[in-house]
Length: 393
Ligand code: GDP
Image 1: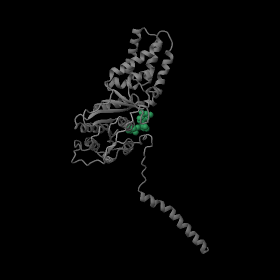
Image 2: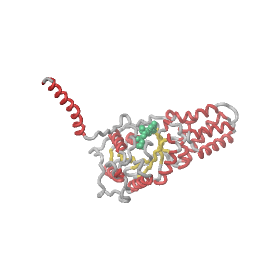
Image 3: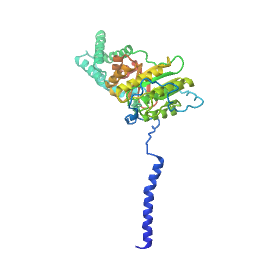
Image 4: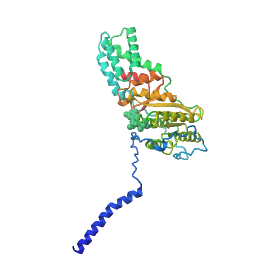
């Protein structure tokens, strides 16, 4: 082999070594490849696949050692700007309309209405079809029976024919919803900061709803602080941080796997110190056991209650598309913390919107807001008349 060929060979070898080794060195300097998913605009996205909670969070946090100002390590919090940002003056937009977004549940009722748009007396088939439609819309057996009985009674009194049944059904649904639940408005503290706790299992739309509420309240001129008390899912805190940035809200978040109680304590403390109006706490939706989760929620509630009058809402977030399964969740949460209202999300993509009736009938807790999409403005106050008319009107 000539010396030129040898030089070329050595050259190729050196080049190959450089090409293989160099990228590794660069990567090693950058540290491990961590894919931090920053939610995309306009709405921070979908929940991350749920990682198992970090092992160090396994042991029950030293139970009754609720965070005290002096001893508790201050959770990492986003520094608030020195001067408070001027509240946005834009009015709270409500872009989504119940009627437009209730499509799939509406179509469940459309079949029934089609058969009823005729004159003539009501037959057993009509009543069977009404019952079937309500069950399909996930109204649940007990509530369905009650609704059918109510409509039958109305029909008897009015000597109604098939064509008037939709109007009677609409009136029955609206009246039931009005009778079963109390005040649907969100409540605020008379003085000092208001605190709302958002509770619910993972994936129902808790973080998204927290952001939607923050947007709405910012639009109404309130100064809002978001507390990422789900310290077990870094993605949830990141999602909330993105929102806090965009909405010009303060944020308090803890160390990964840290004590959610410390986050809540710190959040309320900061809100008082800075004269903020509202703290919305996004809590964890899953711990190792349900018992842990419920204990943790009770603990968070007690921490907020150290400031009398601050805790104004414990909002259970339920995913409408899980239908009757949502009732099981509601039962479990209601046993541990006193729920003051329900936010029913994803009503836009489901045929199971009838679950609203079941929730209110069983719990007597008002559905205060409904989520009608993934957009920041897709959250509306729940209105029974509008809902009934959107279903059957
Ligand atoms: P969390 O685990 O309870 O905090 O749930 P996320 O807030 O991360 O939401 C889970 C998924 O549901 C995300 O993809 C959201 O965009 C979506 N989502 C939340 N609310 C609604 C809603 O009202 N309608 C629809 N269609 N999707 C929603």
